[in-house]
Length: 282
Ligand code: MBD
Ligand code: FE
Image (cartoon, rainbow, N blue to C red; front, side):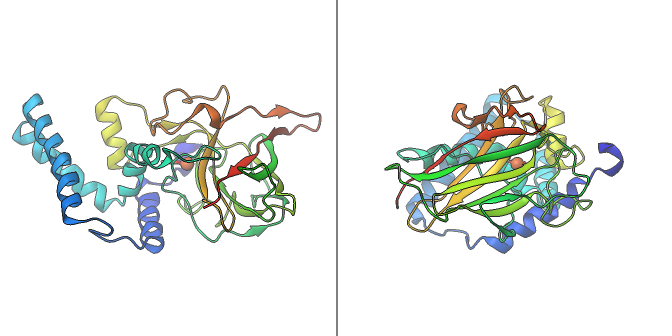
């Protein structure tokens, strides 16, 4: 059961922080003038000050908040916390004016350099991988309707218990992750399993905050994808499942109506979903 083999928050937090550090080249102050740093940080602090006045925040609450912030860092949960509670807004701002398929947030559990796979393929999975079989097939097109030959679909998702390989120690490396290379017509057909909803670990500071506030810790089941090809803006997105739990109250507020799949049961016991992606030239 989940409780018996549940990876700790510290396990996934440490891995998420390590992966972020290994893959990001950003540094404090990058890309921003002093005027912009000042304006943005001042607005943020004004919000904090306003909240303190409005709610007459006490010294003990202030010190508890300080303690919590220290624990988020020590537990490696900044990628988790920020991607759950903040990234959706950054994505919405970035998406304004973009053409092509809808995007969504990246989240903390992307691992680059997954195994490359042919256009008709299965994702790497355990021999006894649980979950309904899903065949996800379609075509990558450009905004003019032309196929994008050789487009890459970098796909990753949680398993039947909501755990991600690379962040839960009991899962094999690379499980349910792959870079699928579309054929000359931009077509692909990916066999995998349907993931379960994702729960923020309850034993870490982010989970403790969620609990203390009486919120729920769930994201609806989802597939993650980055669809990319040279000369096009990569699309980072997530796809959800019609009728699934938490679809209408994702803790990360990252669902969009265009991103909901409804796989249809087939005679061979799999469920099949067709979905095309549209890339915008850069
Ligand atoms: C996830 O699986 C996820 O996709 C996001 C955005 C945040 C936390 C966990
Ligand atoms: Fe996810």
